[in-house]
Image (cartoon, rainbow, N blue to C red; front, top):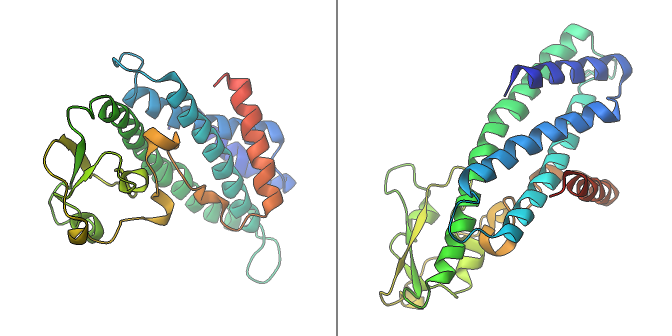
Amino acid sequence: MPKSFNRLIDKYIDLLFKKHKVPKEVREEVVDQYYDTLSEAIDISYTPEVEFYDKDLVKALKENIAAFSHFKEHSFNQILTDLLINNKGGLRSWEEFKKEAVKVNTSYNVKYLKTEYHQTIAAANAAEKWKDVERTKHLYPNLRYLTVGDNRVRDKHRAWHGKVLPIDHPFWVKNFPPNDWGCRCDTERTDDEPTNEKDLPTEIENDKFKNNPGITGKVFPETIYAAGMTNQEIEILKKRSKNFSNKKGI
């Protein structure tokens, strides 16, 4: 992330400690940074230069990223706010708070954000590929699931390596790669005969990645940062996200 973002987070942490609340405009700046970072990942991997660029699909992907960015910032704020109080129920000192806040920042805004960036690239690539798969299904009506084949491949993914299913099979609605964080699986089009249903393993179905970005228009099918939020909080964030998308002209 640019130095300007680091300065913004320092300001965010400082204001939260001094006022026990971060001003709306500062929080919105952080949301904006999250969105711009992940939106760039979409633009890099699904460019208007591709032959069959789908504007509506890209719009949906970016709206999903906008919602994700709002939930991420809200979760970041909640965790930092909780850190103001120590284990004995009293207020932490600035030194104690800053030490813990830096750890959270490193997780949320370095490690997690980097992972989310690469996941967005993979999902946008998958969305583009799916559209091309649909376009050529009269020539290649089936898809073969492929893994990289090394010892890092997840067991459930390895079980599907080489399996062939029709493009219209419900499996691809929820299991079109990527199927987890950092998933490197892929598919290839084929006119080979489908695998017999009785020889198919258990579906992958990672709860957080039951997805096909080319069908759902979502990078992240589940709002992973919504854990622990009330229904009211979720609805407020969805509304803010919608307003944000309109403002951005997504």
